[in-house]
Amino acid sequence: MQSSKRRKHSFEGDTNDKKIRFNAPSYAFLETIDKKKLDFDFEKTCSVTLSNLNVYCCLVCGKYLHGRRPNTPAFLHSVNDGHHVYVNFNTLKFYFLPEGTEIHDNGTIQLLNSLRYGIRPTFTESDIAQFPKRCVDLNNNQYTNGFVGMNDKERAINVVLLAIAHVTPIRDYLLLLDFDNESQFIRRLSVIVRKLWSVKLFKPHVSAEEFVSFALVNDKKAAQHMSDPRRCFLWLFDCMAKYSSTLKELTEAHCRGIVLTTKTMIKTIYDEAQNVKEFVREDSAVDRSMPFWMLTLDLPPKPLFKKGLNVNDLPQVQLEVLMRKFDGQTEKQMSHHILKYKLRKFPDYLILHFDRFDPKSQQPVKNRNQTIVEFPLMMDVDGHRYMLMANIIHTSVKPSIEAEKDEESRWMIQLYNDKADEWLELDGTNVRKKEKELLFLNETYIQIWKRKAS
Image 1 (cartoon, rainbow, N blue to C red):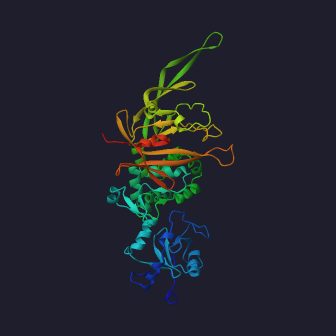
Image 2 (cartoon, one colour; image 1 turned 180 degrees about the vertical axis):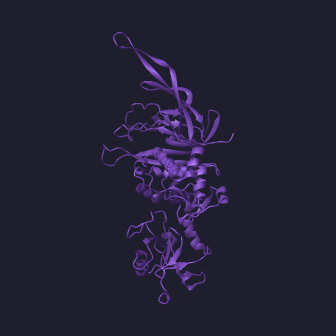
Image 3 (cartoon, rainbow, N blue to C red; image 1 turned 30 degrees about the vertical axis):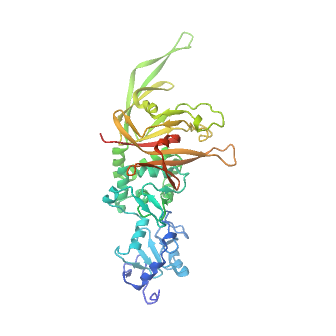
């Protein structure tokens, strides 16, 4: 800059940082900002030092760089490459480097406001009341906020985050919360949910990379949960309860139900030769109330298929039949006892899990139960009316070389847009409309049902 030699440098930690006013000539440098080169979804670490402290983004080329003091990566980048405009990811303040002067715009510059929104979208209650809505990205590609594709279709966490982002009480809290009063985990969860509901995306898909990276580093058990949506759901519920008392209350109030388990022991009667004569139920039974986040439904035993059968040859079962497990009458035979289940508390959001994988199998994906589940879009559960809102489905990819290697799971999610009365299928970054009559033709793995008001 022309006046850089006459100005005193001011850097972080200096309370006398100079602030450039809106009408300063240096604002010509804002024209060098290239939004199409910016991607704010990655973990906020310096591309040179890998430090996650005091990280800035060069708004000319998109690099993540540490610091703005002399000889820091950001400072040297501004000198060597002539890129002068930066934003601090934590404070959302903008600076010109190498001078280190803050751009003090008081929210009056639309370009800078759009960048703040891109890093950390903000909403009001009136905004949320209008969702979902049609939007356009930087390249004028249309998308519907809340129904945004995500990179890396192999990750189970992606479909779980999309599903959680449609549980209204959780979504609203994460969109409106005060960032400064939350833990780092909740902040990162909030950011990804905010981006899913953003009305000003730079591109019509987002990435959970920053959230996943933080979880893997700070939770040793996270990695083992992220390959399976069921385990991922339970892990995420536990984390929300652990890191936020408000989310703990919200999830327990809206997503947790109670099931009554009745256990009756079986007594074995032997004859004089100690051969089994008969099995007799004991007169007494033990009742136990158990809270749950999701109900696991047992699929019929899979038949012994011959190779080469297609989807038309797969067995089918109706959801109504599977739900009888929880009617309080249907018995489940165990080795030494009989179990019966009865729903006692019906959550506002009922999550169903269809048990397809045998953990004892050497190839659980290849040998999974592929039974097709037929389901309605509305169902009654003991007098409670539920509407299907999310359907997580499973597909697999065969190994290309090793014949003995297990198949790899792929996850998609189908979400209902009640404003447009349409279903959208999100497969990685691809989003397409789905005919409601064809939803059941896939391998349903997890569903979320929303209870309708009486």
